[in-house]
Structure formats: C-alpha cells, structure tokens
Amino acid sequence: METLRILHTNDLHSHFEHFPKIGRYLKKAQADTSVDEVYTFDAGDFMDRSHPLTDATEGQANIKLMNGFNYDAITIGNNEGISNPHWVLERLFDHAHFPVVLANLREEDESMPNWALGHKIIKTKKNTRIALIGLTAAYPMTYGPNHWHVKMLGHAMDQQLAQIKDKYDVLILITHVGLKMDRWLAKNYPQIDLIVGGHSHDLLPHGEKVEHTWVTQTGKWGNYVGDIHVELENHHVTKIAPDTIPTASMPAEPEDEAVIQGYYDKGQKLLSEHKVAKLPEKFNDDKIAAVQVSLDAIADFAKTDLAILSSGLFLTPFKGGVLTQYDLQKALPHPMHVVRSTLKGSDLWRLVMEIEKNRHYLDHFHLQGMSFRGKIFGQMYYKGIKVDTRKRIVYANGHEIDPEAEYQIACLDNYVLVPFFPTLAIVGENEFLFPQVLREVVGNYLAKIYPLSSRSEVNDRKK
Image 1 (cartoon, rainbow, N blue to C red):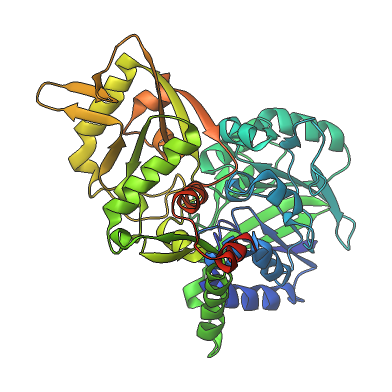
Image 2: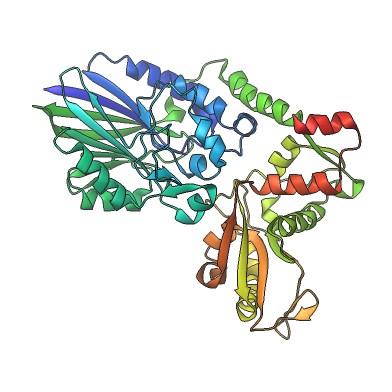
C-alpha cells in the first residue's frame, strides 16, 4: 500500500493575516513521515490587489510568501489572469519556486504562456505517476480584451487527456472554475480521481464525492486549509478522505500580529511614495465630490458623454491636498474595469428605469463577489442623464432620449455582471476596457485636471 497526504489552499486573496499560521501548519505537515509522500497545491486567486502590498509589488510579495509554503503546483484564478494587465501576469512567476499548471489559457497567437504548463506528471517514490491538470474560469469577455485567449473547459480537457493517455496512474485537477463546474468535470470525465478546486468560495468540510471523483474546496481567504489522506494499491487509488482544518484553530505566535501589520505598513509606504494629484479643498470628506469626478474620469476614459457609478464603491472620500496611490487604493480597492456600453435609446431608457426601480433597495444592499471589495452597493449617480420619475422620461445631455438613436455610456464590469440591470448584459454591446482598473482610470484623470504643482512632486508620481 502507498499513502499520500495532499495539502491545499484556494482563494487566499492576499489575506496575509492568516499566512503565519498557514505557513507553520504546512511546514509541519510537509514533514510528516507517517505517509509516503506529501504534496501541496493552490487553486488560484492567491493575490488580490485590494491589499496595499500586493498592489504596490504587482503580486511579487505574494509569490515570495508562497515560495515559503513549498507548493508543488498551483493554477491561477481570475484575480491573477484578469485583474492584472497582460504584462504583469507575464512576469508574475519569474521568481516562483513552483510550477503553474494551466491548460486553458493561451497567448493571442495560440502559443502556451512561457510561465505555464498544460499538465505536469510527477512520480512518487513508489513510482506512481500522478498527472496534474490546471484549469481557470473561462471568461472570454474579459480575458480577450486583456490579450489572452481562454479555452473552454471541455476543449482543454480533451486536448490534455489525449496528450497524457497511458502516461498516468492518478489524475488530479487543480481548478479555479467553481463548484458547479467542478461537478460538471467530475460527471463528464470519470477518469479524474480528485479535484482540488476554488473560485466559488464553497467550504466542503469533508469534500464531496461526485460519482467516481472527489471534489474539495476550502472556502475563502485562508480561513481553512485542506488536508487529504489518499491510499493506493498497485498505483491505483483505493481511498480518498478529505478534511479541512480551521485556521482559527491553529496556534498563534507572539510575533504574528507584528508580522501581519508589517505587510500592510510596507504596502502603504510603497504606495504613499507615489503622488498622483493635488486636489482642492472641496474634496475633503466629501464622498459625492469623489463620485462626481470619478464619473467624469470613466466617461473621459471611455470617450462617452454618459456614465453611471454607485456610491458604495467609494470606501473613503478623497482628500484635499496631495493624493497618493495609497489614498486611491484605500478609497477604490476594487479590481474592476470600465465598460463602454452601446445601447439603443429605448434600451437606455429601460436601463435607467431598472436603476430607478432598484435605487432604494440597492442603497443598503450588501453586495459580495464580482470584484466588489466594499460592503453595500449604495446610491446610483449619473453623468449626462436626468430622470423625470413621475412622467418616466429620461433625458440624455439635456434632450429626451430618442428611442431609435444610439447612445454610449461608461459603466463598470460589475454592473454587467450583477442581476439588477439586465439590460446591460442582454442587449448592451459591451466593450471591456483594459488594462487599467477603476482607481487607475480615476487617478490618471485627477492627475490631468489637478496636476501636481512642483517638479519634484511630478517626479515622485513617475517613479
């Protein structure tokens, strides 16, 4: 008999507050001599630009810390593949001590990224051949504008399985596709023994068996670590017993708090060194002023006259005086992109009616996921649009909407994804604008209309 111990994480999202405990747990488990072999995997979204240190180092701080976790393989999530510009992802793993398995992402010329492997076969000390295939969420609408070609899961699986036919004894998938798609993979590819998954933030305390395949996931943010016991006979799996360990149950060390605070302080320091603009006093503690200038910013970026934004995006107001990248990151931590949506006048009218219908509901609605890093959705604000709610008349640029005319409006990818404004997703011709995220779009606009006054300040911004 052969025994394996498989440790796994997913959706860490730069929650560095758990890293000291996780690191110690993994190190101790990796030294376990009661089993023949220990392997450690991560299923993506390990970085999140809402943390200052991740944003300041373009994820390199995450890679350095993950090197200390001694992963045997990882795959990427949408926070690595979409929230980062193409060139950042190209160099993200330059100093990684672990391979990235990712079967369904290609460069625009269809070549394999030079930092990824479609699959990897590892051999245990007892000569069992374990094939690893990595998959990430297939979002062509957002990978395409970021100059990647993402493949559908079935296509990628068929291609990889053909390449590894008769070359493996055990098949493990490391996926960032969500529990629903993991179940689909298990049902359609019965040769899979184990799926180490992520993306949907589901906690499966003892895994879930889908026909012949075990599916595992540890929730989110490093709140749990996966720990799986595997038994084999003659190189074939006879038992898989998944478990999850609460990070809260792991012992703390006296220095943990200082280490965790140090990660934040370093990121804050790095971002604060980059000055963006010099704002007038009207921005002091005035969130609405921040919303209004940000409406102008996304409209300018998308080259539209019309725009919409929600107040819940702004976690803090801007401030008068010198605004730094840290100030912007603290106010707008979301990895969201601007969308230019083209709508017929009748559809724009419908969109505005959807906004007005949901306005009071959304004002205090607690929103999660879809790149949102705040707490509540908040109030919707318009640029270039006015509404007579009593008469149900919508005006664009001072004129009543022409039902047959074509209009363009700047919004965010989040608004296309949330269920409250279906018109955008159903009939909008939506162009996702990359690579800048919202705070970068706003920062560039503020730098243009409220420039730094001195040459030294301008040089600081360009560092």
